[in-house]
Length: 200
Image (tube, rainbow, N blue to C red; front, top):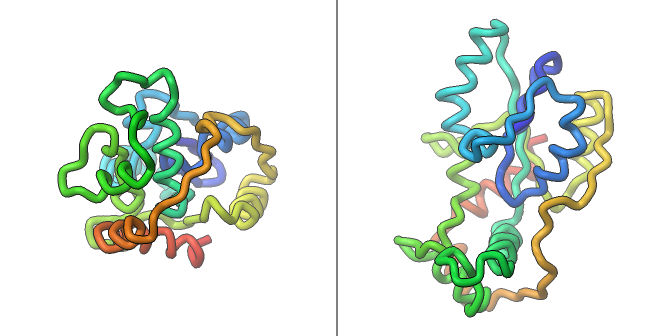
């Protein structure tokens, strides 16, 4: 999470959306950089609204706008699959070694997800209890220009990002039937991604 106090902007870090690279580029310009613990670094909207927003309002008597990046659900799951496929996790219950991507996504669609597929939810991160979008500005990972334009206009600097925390290179394809199941079981994941097209 990045806090830009003078600019009244908070950047909420959705996991696996390139936020590590943006953090590296923007940290020198931020008033506050929260890297640990992970629960704060990756504070979801509901956690931010409950704990941090009241603190900021009390400290500065001002409301902060929020922004985030969202990634297409299939590509987001690909990133998680590859991240959990790395050698360091071999033998761990979170590892995706020994299974294909279809199996991983099918397990993500289960009502009770096994450990390797328990990777959270972009929808739960970004949506409020009423199902409405919980951030003021939402950008798609796949369309970086609007995000960069916004940051340049708001912060006065255009980020020059480096590839950080990159998952291993792998060619992954999702079977049509599995994607159909994902869309049926997790419609909110696709709905929140669609919101990124119109919220900037």
